[in-house]
Length: 538
Ligand code: DQQ
Image (cartoon, rainbow, N blue to C red; front, side, top):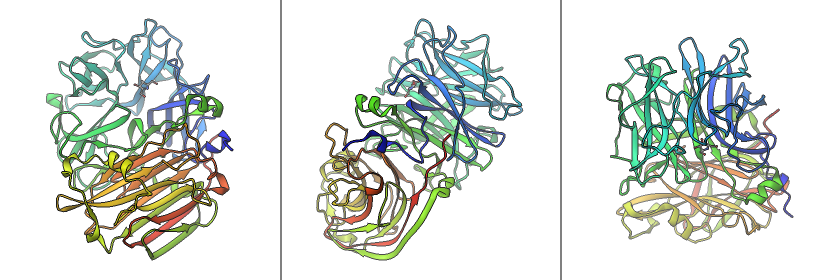
């Protein structure tokens, strides 16, 4: 039954074949979006001899693949061109800073410059003759020093860049400064660090506005009206925190105390509680927004990837901004994705009784965008959990209370990539619980029935959504594309991306349902769904 081709996506960014991982150096330059990514051009599995593959787009949805921007060719990167970022020097001059794996397998930082500024595609990049420009500092393991951020200039005009690494006490973003973008000096302490987190990969550091959804770059100044986001990738997920930054002191301070793991408050903030790693943001000056790219890896086996001939996706780029509460970030697929919507289906104010399902769209639903919001007339019937709020682990709750458990207010939500007989489906749902005299909104993505194939990883993903269901409707938006399901709960407060490999629910045989497995009726106040056409990727 299993044919690997049906798992390939139709509107997500993918190379034609082979392995892809981290997004690198995304930027907007002279009317064109550029996207670079870690790519093994020789196979569908990871190989340290990475290249920077390069694609361009006018709309972040349709793409043209160009020649590789960087390949391992010189002693300073002969064993691989690893992740990095683009920074803009004055007069709109982009520079790539990337990690090279050098001839002695050390991780060093290198500079690359466009070979020809009059080429709007910036297809050729010249490696700087004096590379490497930053060698691993003393006291740091030479193979744990990588992934420079986009650099920023302080009020004193000096450049700063943060580089991921591991110190004797834990993961860190090492800080370097430079006057000329060529000679860099290590600052005496890291920009941020956390104990016991292991090596930080792909740090990202940027300002967000306190009000509104617009993005902002560092060049707009420091301090008033902004907060700063510090993100690091470790333990297979992207962690972030919010805080303040004083360039004169070279210090980022989190609002929540040191590190990322705020046990007792919110169990740590993550961009996405499913598969999403090594992400990177950039400021899109054309639309005054900040955009987040993230790598979504596979849940199938290495051998499956070899059979498929490819591995790794990028999530649909997301606009990202600070929530009104100031406590977390909000993410939402870029608006350009709407250009792919076809066959509008909608319904309003429909009761979804306890233990019922309802088909949506009617027919093929392997490429779908769906937005639904629920009202909960019987909220007070929610079950109580007696554990303290601070120690509830949503991932564990989602594994224990999967979509088939009959609760009271929930589980309710969507069944995507569902077969006709519902024997295969992926459930994205909410379950309302009462804990500590308040309502807790649990959001889960349950892959346990997503495929008849036994060998794929079907671990449940889960997180809380920071909304009070007494006052707010509970909304869910989900993008489905053959083997990827990206879900945005509470209008982008909680995001969960999963990978699934159905055997029956493929192409025209995939269906979409709303479901309620609780005993209490919930009301669909509005549901809109669209089939999605293919993106053009040439
Ligand atoms: N992937 C790159 C590294 C980075 C890691 C190598 C994160 O630069 O640390 O492909 O996924």
